[in-house]
Length: 278
Ligand code: SF4
Ligand code: SF4
Ligand code: FES
Image (cartoon, rainbow, N blue to C red; front, side, top):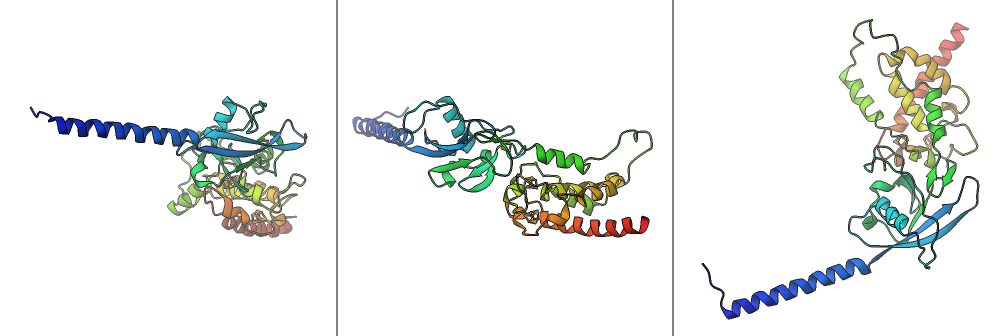
């Protein structure tokens, strides 16, 4: 067994004291450091909005949702006033459900994947502006889901279980569809789109992409004409100004402008077909 000399014992104790001191410094720095938020609040649908500032203790790798949880636990403004807890939506916490979408430092994105370390302070949080506000950072995205119903964004297989196997899909179509299927109805593309507003009926890029997705499926293509007729109606593809901002903000990198161009071609053929049939 190795024996410690008095000198090495002393060095060892000093090292321990130094380590403890540095640990205290790190701990103190972490607790002293604050993250400042500027949050746009609204008490109920249609009521005026107002800003409130909050501060939470810094934690490395914190995301916006974890900070909002801190604020919810202690809803006290930076000025020391106790207020109603801030509300927001979230679910998956891994950029899959789209429900935590909000405007962070002026950019529409998901709060669960927005890391505080990468954001300038004060961090400004606002609800999306193209959807009705429910409360604080929560918005009502029903319009997106209603649009999916209008274009039958599903495959009608009721009653088809006994007619044998479905058609085989080429691998190239499968690969194309996989990317398109990643849409999480987050609303980023609609928030950024200059044509989409609270007061019009424009469907927007996410819906056109879903039409392309289901029209490309061998079984889904059986309802292709119904989908195309829907996007040729009010708020449809002809209202797209082709500004192409949608594709830049999509967190899933869905080739939205390709989908818009493809649906434009499909609707042109459908238009000619409708003229010939009538
Ligand atoms: S191309 Fe422009 S107008 Fe069309 S959906 Fe995208 S952002 Fe909106
Ligand atoms: S297309 Fe992209 S930006 Fe638009 S709703 Fe889907 S995931 Fe979000
Ligand atoms: S919580 Fe689901 S995307 Fe952020």
